[in-house]
Image (cartoon, rainbow, N blue to C red):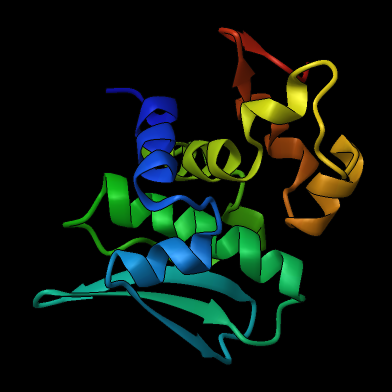
Length: 149
């Protein structure tokens, strides 16, 4: 199953695309703490899955960070993720690309790209509100095509 299908099944099963709500519903602990230049990371100790988020980030960056780390929880449950720093956000490592793709698919539903959609936000507002780095828009697919150069 590909990442997009995984995200769609998750949203359908739990009725939300909010990464904080999904984490709660999946029994993942989310901790806000001072992390300096680190945005966040995922850790696993015994059977407890924990998403750590920098409490000093703006809310929209916390939102994206939670979605990214949730991608690790779902796709790489046995691995403790590397620290997500601003300069590593655009990493070429496979698991980081997969976590970013998961976050993009979760936060940018296909409905945004359907003409005549009744969603109340513009695409630009949605990207800003959800803290999505524009550099990562290249990961979003709609109808099998990339939506951004």
